[in-house]
Length: 302
Image (cartoon, rainbow, N blue to C red; front, side):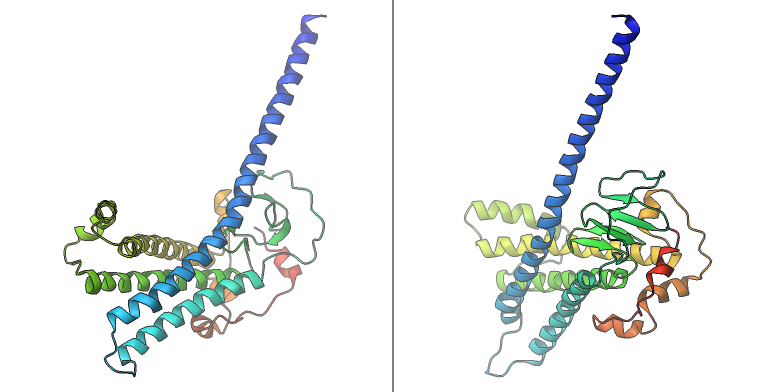
């Protein structure tokens, strides 16, 4: 056995070992993504149910008590506002799932292009298409995969996803305000000092284990931080998506470092996503964009 044979054998063995490690790492990462794809929607519905219960069982009755049998105007007003925000958030959530960005023409798993960067969650194809490994479908003008909705965001459901982010942010921030008011009325906690909110969670946790405060108070305090975090994240993500839409670009293109030479003005790009009846879409989760043929979408370069 010569030295060259040993060298070639070790190189082949090393290559096989690297491929097996890469495959194992890819399998582990895909397993984590699939688990997240199942847990995130459950977390969203659980947070929605908790928000409903806190609003109608604790916040509204405590902040706006009724002295007589008839409800006060402030009670009705805040109830209508909360239901309006929640209705639009859930409505656009459903519309995002109802109108997926998948291609109806591509039923077979395609072969990736030579320029595919082999991302974990999706393969880049030609003519502005992606194959999502989580959805197992070809996505037209793919932006990203949303784990909270469990599907990809693309040319068909981008408008609903943006409105979902807007109303989710508004609902969370509105719940944050009512939660602060509830703690002020029920437990006489003053928020005049800006540092009160920063130290509220650690102090409440310590007081809870000391037996000074109830579990409900600690839970409401924890939910304040949850609402604040979700509200700010959704607001920031919404601003980013609106900016990308106005530029005629997608998040996948940004990840690849690809700059789009879009000839359409920003008004035309926004109209392409939000439609001509965009004002109606701001207040109701309805379809405002006419469905274009996939032949046109397929020729939009990603």
